[in-house]
Amino acid sequence: QSVLTQPPSASGTPGQRVTISCSGSSSNIGSSSVNWYQQLPGTAPKLLIFRTGQRPSGVPDRFSGSKSGTSASLAISGLQSGDEADYYCATWDDSLHGPVFGGGTKLTVL
Amino acid sequence: QITLKESGPTLVKSTQTLTLTCTFSAFSLTTTGVGVGWIRQPPGKALEWLALIYWDDSKYYSPSLKSRLTITKDTSKYQVVLTMTNLDPVDTATYYCSHTRGGENTGYFDYWGQGTLVTVSS
Image 1: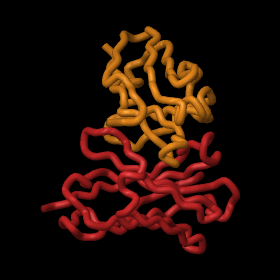
Image 2 (image 1 turned 90 degrees about the vertical axis):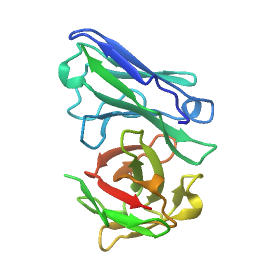
Image 3 (image 1 turned 180 degrees about the vertical axis):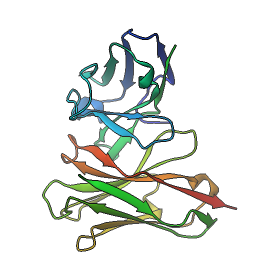
Image 4 (image 1 turned 120 degrees about the horizontal axis):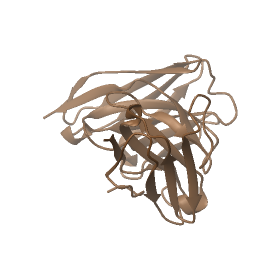
């Protein structure tokens, strides 16, 4: 059971906007920034969003992140077939003294 | 361009000790704020953080695996080594090493190795 809770699946049609939630607690999301990783099938995870809302160079602005209290969200607008992947949220947990990951959300583009 | 690559055995037996090496380039583990972490992923399952070592030799371990893990660095060789003792088939996973920056509460894993699949047989 992951410390951060994500829905196991999400879906949308091309061009649509989808959001993926990540729920935590005061010891993790509530006190730290949140990162999001995209894992395409058969590949290593890739940093998608860091420090809650920043995008690394090369990541399209279709991807955005936000946080409110002990929950965070990843939004993907203008959904594309190439966005089909597993998405993981992650943050630091003060109680566990280390990073924690969510259980992952499998995004399907219908 | 920062790169990392994991190396080690692909098949180990239960109760044995696993030693994985992360060899990296284009950064130094003597640079303030820089660290290397190990994360694993059992087949079809989620990512799980294992251990983290920073430039100042501070170390962090997953509480659930702490008694079995040791992480060390060799700055001259640009390597980080993870040792895991008393392996079990449930430890079968792809093991990734990753470059991290930003410290504790604001840190993130920005470069990842390709991963190495380790299978533990009973």
